[in-house]
Length: 300
Length: 145
Image 1 (cartoon, one colour):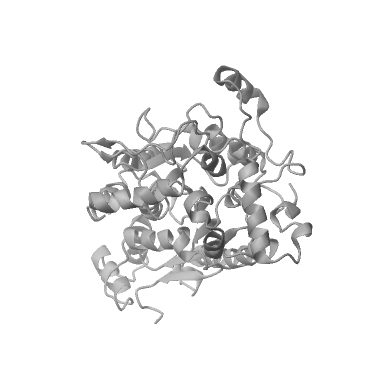
Image 2 (cartoon, rainbow over the protein chains, first blue to last red; image 1 turned 60 degrees about the vertical axis):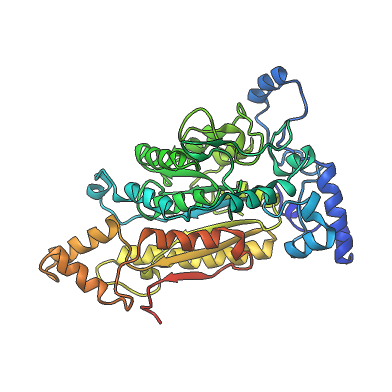
């Protein structure tokens, strides 16, 4: 876990910027992220997963990870290399974090139930313009046109074995597949998402296609919000999380493992509203979270 | 933040625009607020924490942005608690009056809705703000204009 991994390698110092981009693009295709399990038969892989407990960064010195040199503006990067069509996905999987800080609410108000925010969620969703099929289709096409083929799946960190499938339509709930939007197929962690501003933020991010991890000190509140979001066709997990808890990653570590595999970015979880679709969160992520001690130095 | 950082550092390398951290601060993180000293201290701390890590990330080459959001009076339980405290301290006779008094200081003439704040967060979280880091979004309804 060194800093050097995230900086431009020494060997690239002074290289013309196009050259750097091309070399990175090349690497991007050849190598896969090291937390991705190697290609093994399904039955065998499942038994290995529990024991492997992938250590991200363990083999970092030898594995070339997909990374973009930060000196290149992403838009330039896409334009110069023609990456937008076949290769780098400008809306690839990344992560977002919304931190709410501490609340001033007393224990009395904390205990209060029936938060108005939860009912406000419905409004937030209904307030969205009833987007026409054309818009949806365009957005979806943008997703798949730059995200086609199994090689891309590796970049995105999705353990996907089939080609991209179009979203299905269910008459009751609208699209059940990915919700195209500004945050399509990206993961957002919202602390204090059980009510109030946090709940509204969770809903809004989900409405733009983000996979939202709604965390709250109250499991029930988080669950309510996640179910509401899932009911509206969004994608959300509920997790109980006290940000002052020790160890803090315990709740989040329940996301590890990869029993379910989404076949395209943001595939709807079928097992029920608000339930964790494990394939979404990269393995090793949770292990990382669980390892971080809350107390002590803020180390970067 | 500390807990999620290693993860975000990794995943940010998978996307050209990187990741984004949005810290919820408050108007009280910018100006002092009577009777809310502890709250103001924590929100003010968060404001500059956010700026500092933004610089840190940029310098270290992490592909992460950090910004803070400073909503003014927003509908919800915090606001209700604030009104109640005004009544308790005798500044206002009842909740409705407390509400009026507090809204009066906002030129736009209403409280913020939670959706208003959420839209600001969405902007900072999305790639539309890819060039925005270490800044503050003041949802103050014209109060500081």
